Length: 529
Ligand code: ADP
Ligand code: ZN
Image (tube, rainbow, N blue to C red; front, side):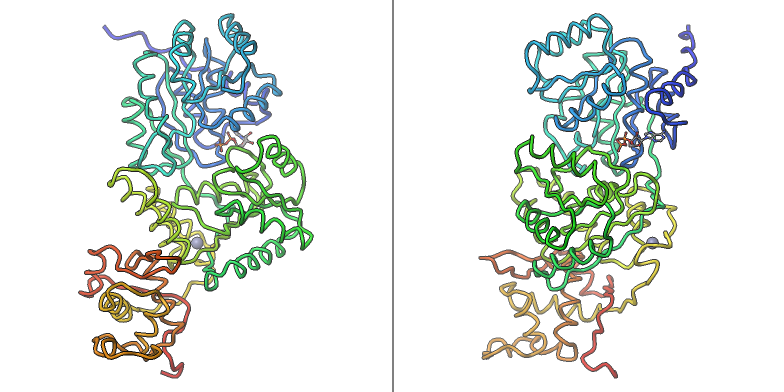
């Protein structure tokens, strides 16, 4: 006997709620399909781009289905903002985190039992407490939403160990529909989310990553000097004066330093990072959100969850560690659909730093390899000669993505040069020199300019084989080899040494099976040849 057909989901009521509570005329993108499935009691995985409106996908079904909607969210700050915003809109929402007093806690549970609560936000640690589960088990649940679901996967870019246990919710609350949402998950991460959260029957929705209002630019840092990079950021912000923007910075120091320098040029710059007291941070965020033309200078990790629709530019003073993170951060710009820009500055020391950071993390070797590959894929895109949004969208599985027509590559395609022979020479030199030297010294060797050179060095077959090319040309080649992972920089007492990268790739270049293309810098010493 087949079960009775599920009641037709009431999309009219869902639209009415969207309009009444949020003031939005209609669902957009895949929202309606997601809401429809969740209303019907189906498990869902929804991958919607940053700013795509993931929250209403579970908030509206939680309000319309009988019972309490449980939302698992990774960050307390994020939760607080969302719940406050909901309350102001008249939605019956609450959060339970370590900052909530005992009295407030029992009031929340009372409201939940009385059926007076539509949404309850909890952290994954909170959920790990047995009394929390016991209490939830005695309540009718409308749904369970898992926000930032990519955190469950080691293959994603922001794995959080306390997310790993969320799969057990499937067994604890059978029959309660679960919806996992995230902005960034490649195919492998999506599969892992489905498996880890035990969402085998889930309807999967993956929205297009196309953001036609974003113009993307990547610019290589000039010789990696911090002062030059700061000056360039100040210049870029100056060219966009009066507009709201975000500058992402790799370190707290860098944040403070850049914010200072921007203020000196009259920009309303606000530093924002995790080293500040929470109250101070909230104050700064409020100022940024409220003011026109303010520029937030933030560390990457600190800047989650807020929503300022008129951010006109995002500048990376330091790039992040993956295409996922890049897309998420760039996605802060132009949420209102109006034109916006993403400008990323990058250099060889950035890739070295990103890899070094991974080295220090305790993780499985295979997981580490995946994370290393993510770093390399980002830098290959930044230093590559392919349309940037197209490259990102292909990475996320949109194989039919077309060139955007407006990124720096589309507008001004770099002239690329086949540098396979030069790459072979550089790799061979690094090898012959026993991987004991840094970039400058390797270039001296290639061009035959080593000071006080000794016999052992002139005896090497690579001595002076690159004299036809200028040192700058070699710098271009070697930087590019670093971005492609054919060379790596090994930090040694502050002076990075060059060593060979991925052996298989290096072999490919030696054999001429893999070509290397470099952009922009004239390779030849003599411009007439
Ligand atoms: P995400 O979590 O996917 O980054 P949010 O849920 O915070 O995005 O929504 C981003 C912004 O888009 C919010 O300002 C939200 O009010 C708005 N939004 C959501 N759905 C719609 C819609 N259907 N029409 C217009 N704006 C919407
Ligand atoms: Zn393009």
